[in-house]
Image 1 (tube, helix red, strand yellow):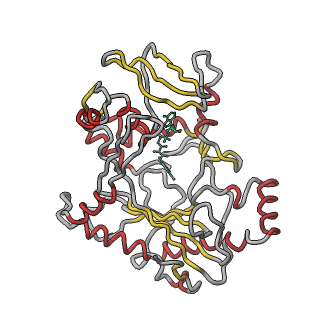
Image 2 (cartoon, rainbow, N blue to C red):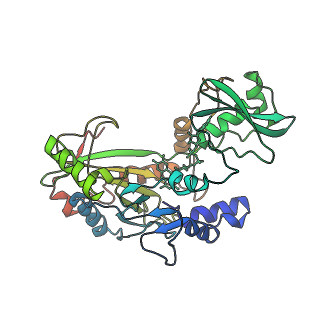
Length: 370
Ligand SMILES: Cc1cc2nc3c(=O)[nH]c(=O)nc-3n(C[C@H](O)[C@H](O)[C@H](O)COP(=O)(O)OP(=O)(O)OC[C@H]3O[C@@H](n4cnc5c(N)ncnc54)[C@H](O)[C@@H]3O)c2cc1C
């Protein structure tokens, strides 16, 4: 799913680089896309990245969607036009019901190029420098250490957790911190590992009466058999499900003029479980997770050992959030606590969706409200 128009425009503003703006990134998104609705103002067809509609419908999700609409969140069939406000089914990266990931879309077609070698099952240990010039990476595969040398450039893209880890192990980061770990400093850059952001998400499950959910549809062997057959024959149904099926984006306080775009999102699923990896509950229930889209807290992530295999990270988000809750929001002068209150109302649904008659008639009640 693409981000909100304002996110890209804000990046353009803070980096002073217009190529981050929504109007600049939209053609790039469109070039890569093969959208089920073919070409229109915000989508296009023919690219490598297949986007399809989900091949399923659940009554409980329809009811949640209608309850949200009755409460002023409009229906949408597309969260990717730059304004995400609305409630509807997510589109998915699938081709004929089968997951279409970045490897299938972009990497595999490029693998016939003579100047591309893909090495898998390899763990990059560090970035290699000659003086202050980056000349390659050290990696380990099948218990053997290798060095891959670069003639031109090295692109480090190991994610929000491992990119700062590899930089610090390689001597790029806060000089004092690296010194304490006996890592020779190549470049003293204090920003490495700082400004970590995450959005808090609470996964709330609700028991319902008189409507079937995946919990009971898959409880017995014949239910599982039907689900398997549906996928085998039509590539549809629960086995084609992405992690979340229905979404809703809205403002926690529609009257707050400082909120220019949605600040919370629901992910709704026709199932419930205590923890991921554990079995589904035996009763009918759905899960509506809610997350903050614009957290103000900032954390950090740093290595605690110079050994890459044993490096651990410290996420100080909780400390930072406690701090944020105590301080004032510089943007509009209101306390962060107000925002947290808005979030709390979204979590227990009082603000938006649960009071609607449609869900009340299902005797919708929180499961394990803790
Ligand atoms: C549940 C979930 C839903 C999301 N939904 C969306 C969405 O709808 N839209 C959106 O835009 N974004 C979404 N995101 C965020 C998006 O997935 C990330 O922003 C994006 O994947 C980051 O890409 P990346 O290439 O920087 O890092 P990653 O995708 O994390 O890739 C880093 C890769 O480097 C590898 N790696 C790490 N360390 C090493 C090492 N030492 N040696 C070798 N390999 C290494 C990892 O195995 C990984 O394959 C979602 C994220 C999550 C978790």
